[in-house]
Length: 328
Image 1 (cartoon, rainbow, N blue to C red):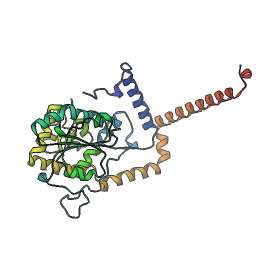
Image 2 (image 1 turned 180 degrees about the horizontal axis):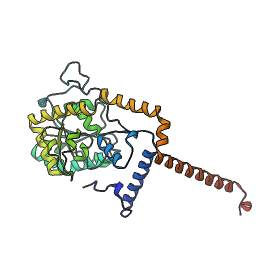
Image 3 (image 1 turned 90 degrees about the vertical axis):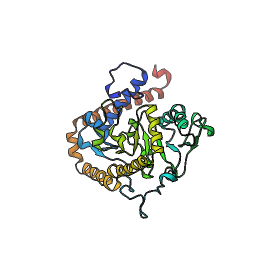
Image 4 (image 1 turned 90 degrees about the horizontal axis):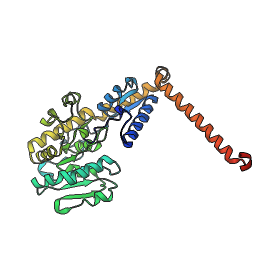
């Protein structure tokens, strides 16, 4: 329920926070309209831009570029981090820098609501929290007795994820492709997350199976995603326990995570698309700008506003430089 507010649908009434969000949305959208090319990180964002009437010629998909994607993790020649078996892994992990507000919110939710319920059902499991710049509130959550361990920054996240059994990402707001989930899949670690966390991380046919209210991900929870997706706290706890304890399902999630890396984030596929998009934009730049009427209008208005602002500064400085009597 955290992200019920859509700034693109704001009607001009509401809290100052909503007004600020709407203003930020308009400024960012104006920047997109003024741009010659927009690199878009996922199909979800691509659909949003198209719904706001951004022409497709401006949009180029530019998701994560995993050069390990497509490699067999069990092969001796793979570039993937070493992947340990189900029996050789233990504990839950969550990852994310704490200067990013959604990560702070997710760890608070884990500590206060989710982990106590998981720990009650799995008394020997531990929850490891990694991330740079943990504030005092996050550090104060350290509780070895309950198995909630706050580590802070880690030098080798691949090593941590490769030895963890399940990554938990109870994200309630945010946007874009979640790097922590990509990293977990790279290391063969299944994920339990939310609809927000899974945005942009499903193939087109799977995304279309999500119910309109966003509360049920029926198809993605049958082993066709790299983990489980839950919409509320109790569902999240059930999903975490299932992924952690049921080896057969865990193996399916690990395999599907690897498949999705290859389908969505294969660097050998995605990088040439970006390169081609940039080259095309440069080669046809003048023609693009002639066709981009809205962008031209916004550039003109921006330049005029800068012109008049500079004149205001010039006048202010000239008045300040005059003797007080002359200024009067």
